[in-house]
Image: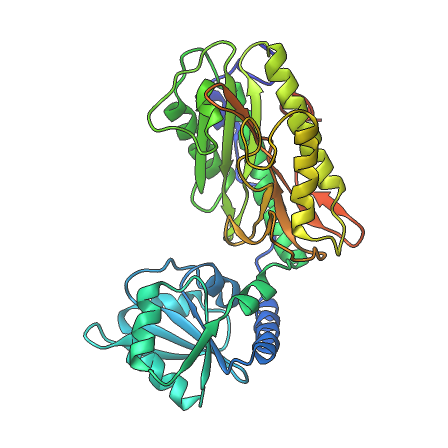
Length: 403
């Protein structure tokens, strides 16, 4: 076994993990105001008088309110001019005020009242005729609003939401860099606890505990641990696997730091790789590197996907989504949502701009045999791309040596 894999225990690795030494600063209130001003410009371009944003990543983006959506409407109505209005259950007022970092009017509804009628009244007071809808707003909320304000014209707010969120600021990049560095350190320590017979459940439990110990918001935001032939299924198989000598190990996990996501996959072998495992891993590495090298401002997202597929097809995989080969897109945007626009996939003609952030993961699947996925993230720079984390260098060395 090499020095990166095995040789330790979960208890020993957890004992030395400490909260992140130099945490990135929180997003300033002034930056949130700039985001709203940008949204108002995009609303004007779209022809919308107001934008409604439900609880979830976009509400956190603009107002620092990191609540998940529920059956109770919590929403921000942003007019094209002026301060936003927050619609909230009355009993949640204290929690809302504790989270809110921007100036806003707050309107409250009691449990027996219709929040949609209240929102419609707010929109009427704003003289809004055209409302842009947060694409993540649940249908029941959209439907309730439609019934409460039947004369209101609605359209998709995606050009506004995505137009703001897909370009990350230096403060956002710093938070994402921290999250990804933390997850890579957790990956490194997870590899050290592997022993014959260990279960996927035990590894997932360790990864969650390690993310908590190192200072993630709520432990692992997700975690997939796949051994052997289960690695041939991009999101794994139900049930538990036990590790055996010669198994592919594929671990895909992430965490959040102040809401910003990491999402990193490492693939290696428990024991000595055989010739086919090594061959496929090296093709995967070349495809990931080619996609990264192709990144330039102005290049379309779909071109990056095409570059990765060209490498795979030259090695006999595919074509397109055919297996053995790559069954999904090459990458996704990432930020306050783990998957967000734009996407590195055929048909996405969005042109890359500095500040955009993506996963790079052109997985290779050999059905019922094994799969290899190397996933790291990059951000677009003025003249190319920069990695958040250094990619895996070889199948034999999953992690760079620490100083």
